[in-house]
Amino acid sequence: MTSESGETTLREAADARGFDIGAAVAATPLRNERGYRRILREQFNAVTAENAMKMGPLRPEPGVYDFADADAIVDFGTTYDMTVRGHTLVWHNQTPTWFEPWTYTDDQLRTFLRDHVHTVAGRYSGRVDAWDVVNEAVDDDGTMRETVWYDAMGEQYLDLAFEWANEVAPDADLYYNDYGADAVNEKSDAIYDLVERLLERDVPIDGVGLQLHALGDHPDPESIAKNVRRFQELGLDVQITEMDVAFHRDDPPADAAERQAEYYREIVETCLDIGVETLVVWGVTDASSWIRNFKDFGERYTGDPLLFDDRNSPKPAHAAVLDALSND
Ligand code: XIL
Image 1: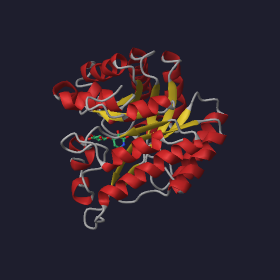
Image 2: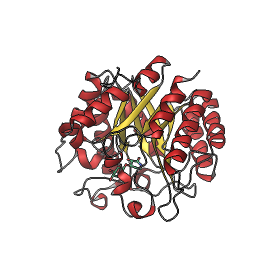
Image 3: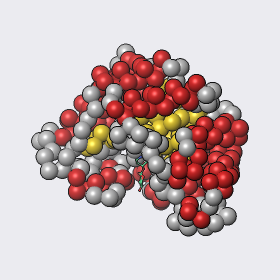
Image 4: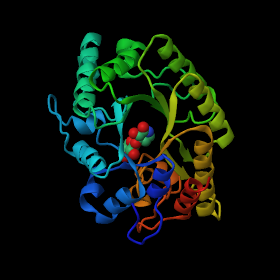
């Protein structure tokens, strides 16, 4: 798809080489802002829901699912022939406000989660191409994160979640997704061990998602490549699922926009080198970046981590990604 301005788009360059370049999308600007919709359909060939498919947003009240926002995003992706990533079926954050896990027995929690996975993954079967089935199950020190799901079922909750998703969405690729595990480090070592155990138990997992929120620290691309390769050697696909690039606000480099562009370029080149075929950025324009509103991130990091600026104009980072995708 050529842009209104007639320039080559990221999407064209990505399509030409069979690469998926995606963006996380929020339902409100998708509904209300033409410029946002235009960038999304012209520049990206993959889409994911930034929040709309999480358990909390989907389930406003006990017994009630509200699929309006998630449907709007999936419909947009389908209409414009985009790959759709589903995010996320099982997570410890953004659970519904009414959900009070201590009122359930372990067995009830297992049934609750099974029904959730069946309902959500089942609804989008055939339309969501890849699911982040489980998000962030490993803690920063490499131990299993003690979430409500882990407390109720132990590590087996991952096995079950992947099996339940596979039952209702057999054609979707099923991913384990996490942050801070992009390069080789203690956490990615632990995730490697975890997915190895899942594979030994014949759990239907297809891939690992590396979020790559490069906030302040920018993981070394060579170490990322090494990390990706070891997962690929297990027979798994690897995708970059939530990329954004920011700097420490108290000490940003003078040439931040160029440094940001350079890092995006290195990552895209690394992906192309090692057979990572999907890279999703965590937002469409800087104005909608989560960094600005999440906890104290707005004070800690520069708030312009994406490829398009607040006025919907492409940044040096956009040119760098386009260039990397266009080169052989
Ligand atoms: C973030 C969203 O971007 C925010 O809007 C929301 O307030 C919190 O969650 N890892 C993930 C994503 O897997 O779901 C998170 O998204 C960012 C970190």
